[in-house]
Image (spheres, rainbow, N blue to C red):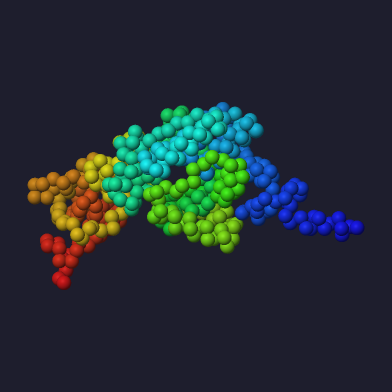
Length: 417
């Protein structure tokens, strides 16, 4: 008789492991538990609530902007925060904040989704655009620079646009939909790039506390699969699922593919990568950038000019390649001019050659040292279609030492064929 009573429990592998009453509708990716929809909704929302309370993400009476793109993450975040704010009486004043990058056929469609979310969740919406803030749309930028490095412009501009939009709303914090997969990808990317400064803070659940608007990530430990393929799908939420038309070749995509492969082999790998990032300790001898403000726009920056101003100045002067990483050499198909005397003046580098002045935007590293020292140590600059490369060290800063094409006339390093 006892064995007969135990049989339903043993055979209940298809029953929800929480309520043990309803049929299981899914297997949770990070715990492998088989649970029903109703229990999943409750567990999912309460896990987010626990993260918010445990990390003290919000305080009663605060104004919170939710970064809303119309995608799965931001839509679920708006839905869950609205519900938790009501259920647990957080006392928050919630807003939706969207950025219009000016990508025809992508962002214009996703913003329509955000406008519907505004009505569905009863949240006020604020939209800021690249065109209004910078005078450029991403469509125009891509026409100028091509599909390579366009994500650099968009990422830098978008981050600053969100902060400026949050300032207009006068909010206390900005909540973003970054999930566990996103954070694991960022840890991996920062390791691959050797970016110690970002590696030390990329796993923090609250960032930018020393900046204008702190940011928080309530989905830090939430898997993308649970957000999109379970919660958003089962709840039939209204979200936009098309990928950006300019991002197929983004470097992050390769890290994302690697993370997905790891997840298939071992689902726990995503949380383990995040935990590894949290436990990294930066050597005290490592020189970290000192945060200040941009002399031009007042935005936070570790250089005299922030990255957005450097990129924007390059676009406005017809030199869009300046400010994108380190120069990897010069275009051998284009004519080169040898400039033998250069003078550092403020945020620009004036290169004089035979009485002709060619003005080039200096990279931020040029402005780190004292002007007098830089003038004494700067000997030769090669300029070509907006690329800036240095042949000497400037105040101890390591810079590339490019080689001109073989047989280049007038070059001391010319080689015979």
